Length: 109
Length: 114
View 1 (cartoon, one colour):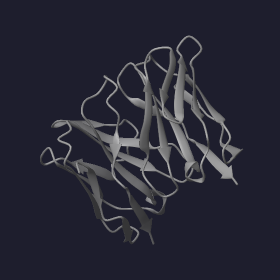
View 2: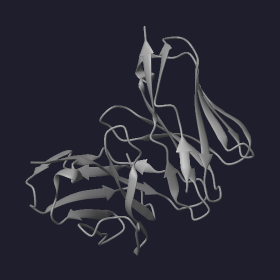
View 3: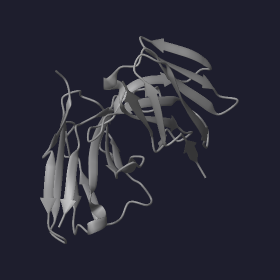
View 4: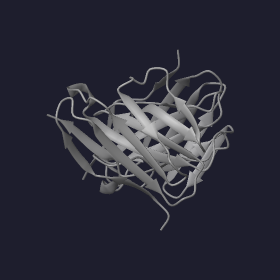
């Protein structure tokens, strides 16, 4: 079966750096997405990786290793507003998105 | 601003009473999706349309139906809601599939079944 694994919850301190990992096992691979979802709201798009390596976008970066079935989202200079769930989603060979359950990130002052 | 709009934001219905959720988009995207999301779970795809081409996920219950009368609008009909159907329903669009086009989500409709 297809599977996306992410930690359920992480805690970090305001101003610090946090890395959220995602491992996947899917039928084929056509890219990996990261979304941010605040409580009670809809997911918003953060990043897309289809080739190996690091993509940097301001305070957020996303890394992909296709051979390892692994990605991470790196958040720098954490702010209180970054408290949210972060969802990893992989597009399989049928162009269907397989979603992880999300990592709830708690930021403490 | 181009966007995805869902109405209503909150919907309360009675057990067994049909309910319709609506979604509209001004992005002119080809693909529209309906997801169900329960607390702390991954979004679960119910249906998607590529233009008028309807795609029903294999495990979507028959209780759920969908309509896309034109490019801009999509509806989710729940014929006989049960308590287990209480969830956030998310409508999303994408320009296409397979080229990294991200999904753009509406704000969701939170359905309560009493």
